Image 1 (cartoon, rainbow, N blue to C red):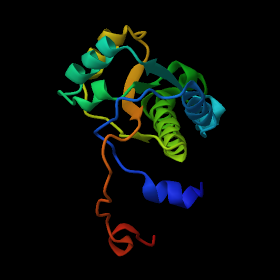
Image 2: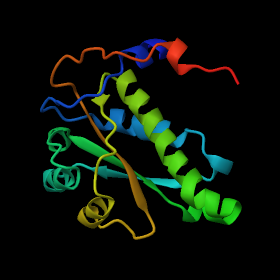
Image 3: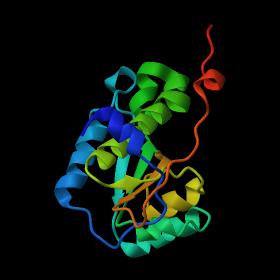
Image 4: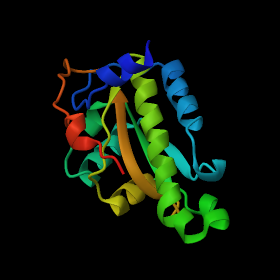
Length: 171
């Protein structure tokens, strides 16, 4: 599939079919995340795979009752791991670079999912402590993004975007 077509077709999906994701497809998503750029190539992030329904239901509660988190067969949790960045970059590694590393890995994952006929939605509205507690995450990790992934449960429609004249500025 053409890269620009993947980007054009990607939509935020909040309705998932009751169809499991093939292991090969999930593996390809994770391999793609691992190829994302990161500050100093330190990969200051960790990815948790959540498949169990009871854990996905706990994520629903932690994420302000966003029920689609339980519908998706897999939820990937992208966590900043500041310890991987702090030694080289100090406070900026902790407060920014590890977060950026997690976010770009997630963005690559979304595109890899779409390239394989899967859909996802970036979820940032959640209680970090509740997510950490429900998944028993190590205390040094900070959950940044919840990414439910699965086959679309409905046909997504395009949403309006800002006009480039409004978005782009010459410095």
